[in-house]
Length: 99
Image 1 (cartoon, helix red, strand yellow):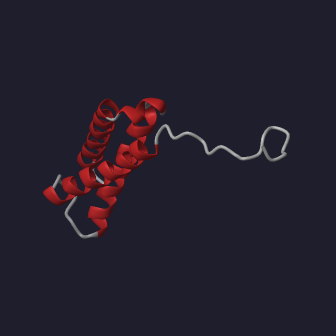
Image 2 (spheres, rainbow, N blue to C red):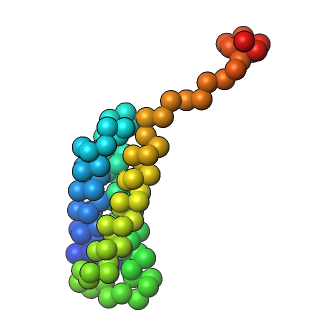
């Protein structure tokens, strides 16, 4: 992985993480760093996937960029969908007896 690919992946992940955090109200309940970290990690996996597919990653290619954006979007979207969910309530109270 070249420095350009790494920088592009980090930039794509951070931008998508910030945009989703700003646009999706459900992301307000998660830590600020979570969508950003998931976006960066997913974008880096897009670079790895491009390299495994045989795409020349010595410079940023369109295929690599598309993979980064798609995977980062899916990852940050998964965080947005699952964010701020209420825990399931149990039919048992604090005493362990049914209500």
